[in-house]
Length: 189
Image (cartoon, rainbow, N blue to C red; front, side, top):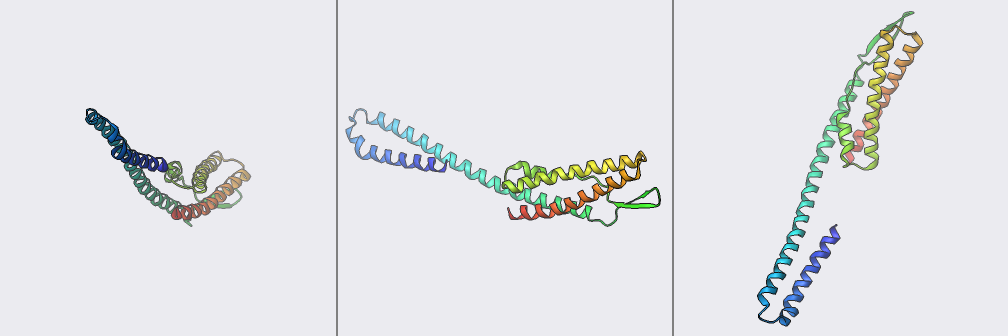
């Protein structure tokens, strides 16, 4: 598109120059006003279209830059918030039968900024993929926490509860790692 605008602008300038220097001398004096009107109307219209396209692209680039900055800030803030929530050493102690206790952080998270940043299309492919990947992991974490609470509510078998608690803890660790990775990738964008 950039080359097309430049080529069109150069062709327009050359055509106007040729008209002024050569073709205007060929046109009979009775038709000079009509020919001048047609040429100037055509050239000014084409020039205004080129300038309009240039201004539109400049505004779009400016908007994309400010949107990228906004997405960087909210994604990093959300990652830091998730890290602070999941790094909290004050988890929930689950008292299980046979005097067993399991420490689990039971919370529900929302990856709104990560999803918005991924959908924007302003980041490279790898960063976008990681933004969607962490969003899926956070949603999976919420499902696993819900599953664990359901097992406890139904007083399920101890092995099932221990397995579900282990899944929650492993997913928490993966989310903490991914938050760090995504924060560094988004900062570098």
